[in-house]
Image (tube, rainbow, N blue to C red; front, side):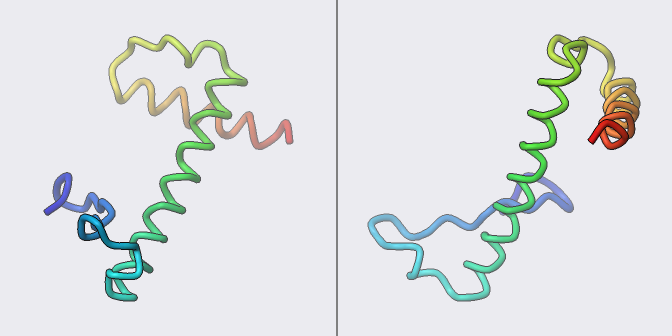
Length: 79
């Protein structure tokens, strides 16, 4: 079960049990998904904080992607 083709979501642990109840490879997969998601969330938060124009964007998703890509390039030059 997932969010769609190519979209990975963490596997839930059994109710009332610890994370250790999952197989080691499932725990590793969950860790990778969690780390990747954290990186994306941090990037989005940094862009929204630095680029006020991205806080209230109401454009189409393709235009938002173009603007975010340009902001990431500019953000990289400022660090």
